[in-house]
Length: 93
Image (tube, rainbow, N blue to C red; front, side):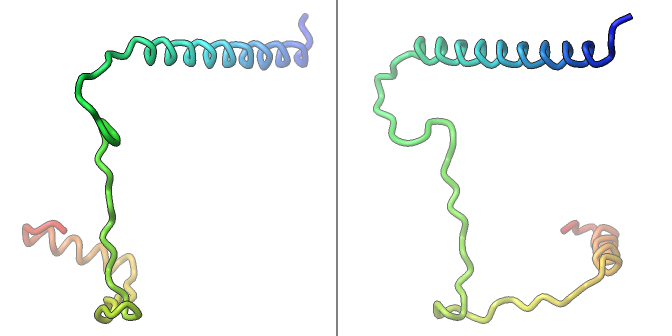
């Protein structure tokens, strides 16, 4: 009969070795893909696939803006009731 400690140690060791091998394989595949990437004739500046998102800040009173919006404290039940009322009126929020 195999000792439970030896069995668990073997499972952990095999999982670790497989993880390292997969990491090395993934890195090698990434490097091969980067090496064979076609060279574009167009000059590209910045990200190719993503568009930079700039969040709009609300002006604060210290910066000359208006008063910040006042939020009234609501319970979860009030929020659910408002949501259900909005849905029944046909205008989801």
